[in-house]
Image 1 (tube, rainbow, N blue to C red):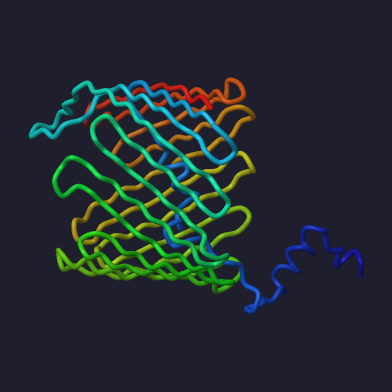
Image 2 (image 1 turned 90 degrees about the vertical axis):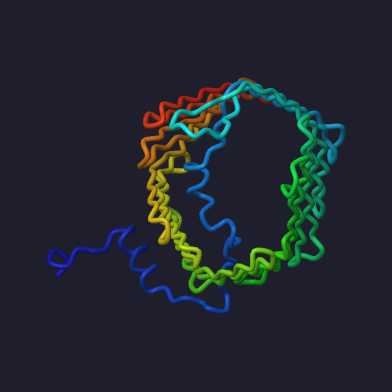
Length: 308
């Protein structure tokens, strides 16, 4: 009988245990925040590419307070009626102050062009978090403010959003099983008198993450991330707008080396981009960015240093 029915291997036994494992609905994990449904895909497909020179310096005054200085020099695109991209040379300096505490986060930024931004995150309790973001500019009707109230339950998350233009929104996401979570959102903008509703789903295991999101505004977003190893992951996404019929798909990668990290992607519009982050020494990082748009004949290259 042993020859006819050979004994199960260790991998087969583990797989059978996982199949037979029942879901304990009273002890489900807490899902990721609704706004972070696609975070793994965004790490590979939405890297912080830039053009020109970038220098960032951060100095810690103590364990909780630090100051930052950033210099950015590079071209800025301006609107044009022609298909060609028009750029003008610009330079900016940004000063920042940061306060980090286990229950309080304060970040402020001011730029030479007059923009002022602030971010606050306060943990009122272990389950209730208040977040605020604000940006003030010299341009009329361009200043923004947003307040978020996040509540984290044992197996769900809920958020209430309040913003300018009488914007009110709410999101909710619930773990259905150990791997699957479902959620939804609603919003109402009083000034343009627009409302919307959306639904989302996320399935996650140790080796892959799949997420999908659809909204009444016509947007459909789907992402898939395959974790090849602890250092390598591949990602793809699909974005479609039902009303405008715009479709975009992209594939990307995220490769973490011992002292470097490489991220890149290519989309259906023919745009290819890559970002290299290499640690030269403790507290010193070198950045190299590239983005090629052959259709528009727009090529962007940038390099930078991060100190601190």
